[in-house]
Length: 62
Length: 203
Image 1 (cartoon, helix red, strand yellow):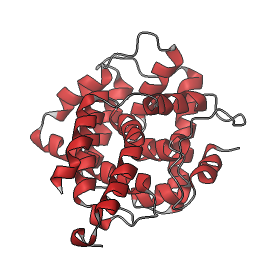
Image 2 (cartoon, rainbow over the protein chains, first blue to last red):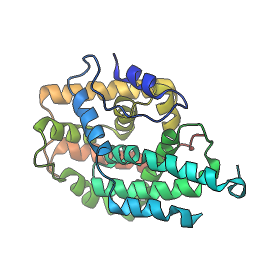
Image 3 (tube, each protein chain N blue to C red):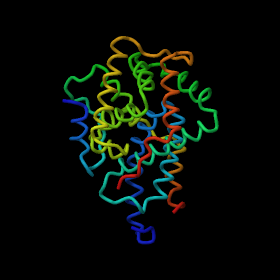
């Protein structure tokens, strides 16, 4: 399955936000897993303190 | 919906959705700029802009797509501003190209990161959106403010370029003097400086 087709199925128009972290996919370009790993590794990171602090302060910015 | 009409509950819903997409914003931003610190600055800027514009977000639509448009436009604006200040070519370019890879990272990932950075920006973002972010062609086209066929073409060309680079071992070295990487960055600078590709936030 093409990466794009899988992406379309997972996200959908106006659908819930979902990640593409699962590894269930048919063979694509040899580098495709590396691309997804690079993207997915960021999803797995804890949010940095600066961003957490900013989120906490948003309510007072309205 | 005006800000005055938004209830506390609606604001809480917005904030919860916004918080939920932060990891995706970070991943997209890092793919665009290649540097974690620059990417997180961009994410913070995006969060502030999104919060200020929350009355323009339509509940029930994709928060991720909406915020990606904001982030992308902020990225282009920042790059243009840096270009005008004249401190991008030798400063940011060198930092991007000399950014250290993770010590434990498999070599193919560092190759992949460098190869991504050599792609023309419009192809790189199209590939990130469709190939990694899981957006459909239609959603990616909306985010980038272009036709679906254009996105398909960009993804196809990006895939072909990456395959050629990684299969043939023509991945740029991690140095500012690498001709391919430097040329790609300068081409990117010229493009963003021209003001191409700024799109309206989706609803």
